[in-house]
Image 1 (cartoon, rainbow, N blue to C red):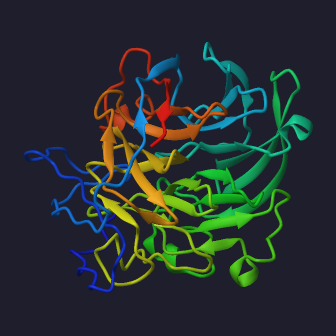
Image 2: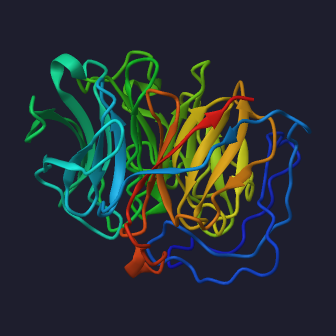
Image 3: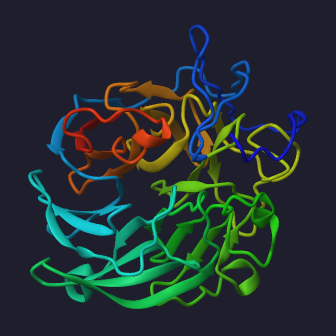
Amino acid sequence: MVDSPGGPLPARPSRWRAAVVAASLAGALGGCADPAGESGAGPLRPAQSTAIPGAGTATLGEPVKLTTGLEAPWGLTFLPDRSALVSERISGEIVRIPARGGDPQTVGVVPGVRTSAEGGLLGIVASPGFATDRTVFASVSGADQNRIVALTIADDYGSLAVDRVLLDGIQTADRHHGGRIVVGPDGHLWIGTGDAFEPENAAADGSLNGKILRIAVDGSVPRDNPGQSPIYSSGHRNVQGIAFGPDGTPYASELGHRTWDEVNVLRAGADYGWPETEGIAGSTGEPPIATLHPDDASPSGVAYAEGSLWIGALGGQRLWQLPVEGGAATADPIAHLTGDYGRIRTVEVAPDGALWLLTSNTDRATWGGTEPRAGDDRILRVEVTGR
C-alpha cells in the first residue's frame, strides 16, 4: 500500500467491549498490497472475540447463476416488478436484469461519469416511489467532484436522464470514493464516502469525505441530522456497505488500511476514529462491532437477512456472515464461498428474500485482484434459511 499514514498504531485499551474478530488463517498468506487501496496487506493479529458462544445462525443454499457477462458492475437495486438495475463502474451504463435472471438490457449511460482507479458510476438505489416517479439515485464520480444525482428511467427502460443533482461538493480522487447509497427505513438516502486518499478529510468537519451522509430524497438535510449538515457520522476511511437491521439499526462496512477492516453500528454525530485509529488499533472513535483482516475481507456491499449481516469481500474473495442482534455481534463471522467466485462487490436482498451477489472480477484484474473466470462478471442468487 502507498497510503500508509505511518507505523503501527497502539492497541485499543480495555474499555473496548464490542465483538472483535480476526479471521484465522492456516499457513502464511502471500500477496502484496493492493495498489488501488481496496485491499491491504500486513501482519496477522491473533483472533479476539467477545461473541456469544453457540449463537444460532442462518445458512446458505447453493448459488444459482442468474446473469453473466457484466463489465465492472458495482451497484444493484431492485424495482417493483422484481427486476433489478445494475450500474457498471467504468462504462457508466445502467443495465436491467429480469427478475428470474437472463441477459441484461441496456438502459442508458449516465452522463458526466469520470472513471479513475476506483471511481466512476458507483452505487445506485431506486426511489421508494419508483412505480410512479421512475427515479433512481446514483453516486457518480465526476471530473472535478463527486455527486449524488437523481436519474429518470424511461417507461420502456430504453433510456435515462439526469433529473437533478441532490448533493455535490464531495472531493474526488483516484481512489477511496466510498460510493454505496441506500434508502433507509426512515425514507432518507444514506451515503458512504471515502477519504479521497487524504486521511485528514475523515476528521475534518468541513469535508464531506470519509463520512456517512444522510439526506432526504429531495436533497434537503433532515431536521434530526447532527449539526444541520448532510454529515451523519465521521472518521471513516472508505465505506462501501450500508445495511439496516429489522429494528432499524444502521450497519456499515469499512475498508481498513493494513491492519483491520471494520463493521460498525452508525450513530448520529459519532466519530469512528480514522485516521488516528484503524479498527481496534488505536484509542479514538467509536469501536467497531467486528473486525477482519484486510487479506480476508476488504469488505464492500452489506445486506441483512435472517439474523445476520452478509458482507461481500473483495480481497478476501468470499461472503462473510456476521450474526447480529440489536447492534451487537452475537457470534463469530462465518466465511462462505471462499475463492469460489472471486471478488464479491455487492450483496442485496431480493424481494423473495434470497441474496443476490454481484461479483467484481472484470473490474480489477489489471490491479492484481484476480483473473476473471469464464462468464465474469455475474450475478448469483443464494437462498437463506432462517435460524
